[in-house]
Length: 257
Image 1 (cartoon, rainbow, N blue to C red):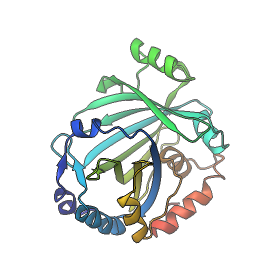
Image 2 (image 1 turned 120 degrees about the horizontal axis):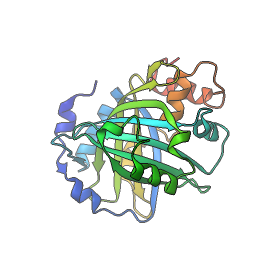
Image 3 (image 1 turned 120 degrees about the vertical axis):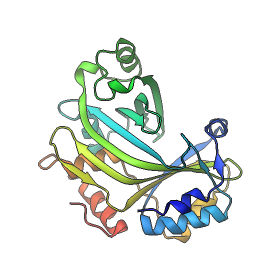
């Protein structure tokens, strides 16, 4: 468990300030580490002048995300089978406020990810199929209709968001990651694992990259959805992701399966 005093020490940055930052030449890179290593990373980030986003009065926000998929798990299998152009459909609740969105993530053949979203009522987190506006939005922004999709995997986690003094990079830090598979009924977690995502202006130097390198934290390509499905779906074709699970276990020094 992270020491809340480490997080509380960061100077605050508001959502309005964050929204005003446009990373025109954005590069996204994911990293994986454990909570013990993260403590040292946070100390170095604090000493380098990073600020922490405050939402609903807290610097650590709780997220609840539900991924939808077809009966044959097309979105998972597209990723597993290395399809370059692919999509994910999910609903997400910002637990502190109850604000809920239907989100469509689309990855192109250049590795770039774009996210579109529309706000929906909290009551539609698990089922938005009766919401005409949400269904029309889904059809307009994705390859799927609501009738084709059903809940697949729920992920819960806590997130810290940092921004550097020059406002040229944002860092999201996700911990306490848990998974609940709606199809198999099985649960899993990333235990002490922490997923860090660095969103930076490719034209600017990155202090966070240097900090991560100092702590021997290396980039990794990881999908929460695919990891969660792999951990909770015995018998499913997941061979491509098994080496990824082993790599994660090695980096966090903890057994997941």
